[in-house]
Image 1: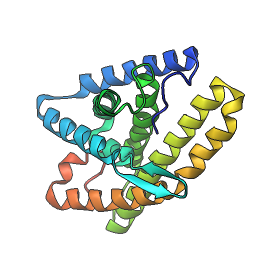
Image 2: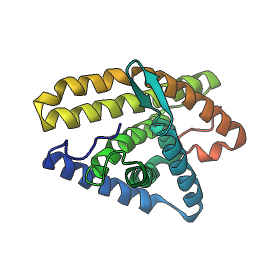
Image 3: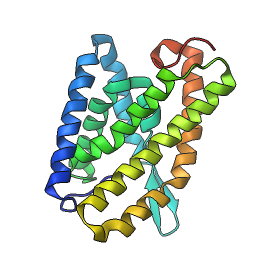
Length: 203
């Protein structure tokens, strides 16, 4: 969900840049030395995931994995997403430098929402863990599509139909990413539950 340069209005671009700067600041402050390899690995995974395009009629969509990344990284998802999108913009011309702030916020903020879903939920069974993982992974993508739609709609009402289409086009990805998140969470849980910071150790 990369919004290209020359599309959004200046207020939206500035707001996105300010919000992303705040998010990156918080993420870096919370990052410890031992968190750097994990953050770099997730950033690389996000970079690769965005290159996997799924055909959808005459167009295609790509994986985002911001829900999964948010669950693992928390606020550190902001610098991870920023680096990933920056590399995509200069290497493949996905998005752009001027839209880097708003694109980062639209993807990273829903990841934070997924993280807090885990933080505030009491998970006392593998079934509940699976359900919450699916909801978190899917909800993050849905929220991203909504933020992208708002970014377009608040720029110009003529983008309203495109905004609606951006939400509808990602409905299959919502389901796919929910399933992927379940597999990732359970795989990590078997290895080391401690890196899933939001999960209370009741399961």
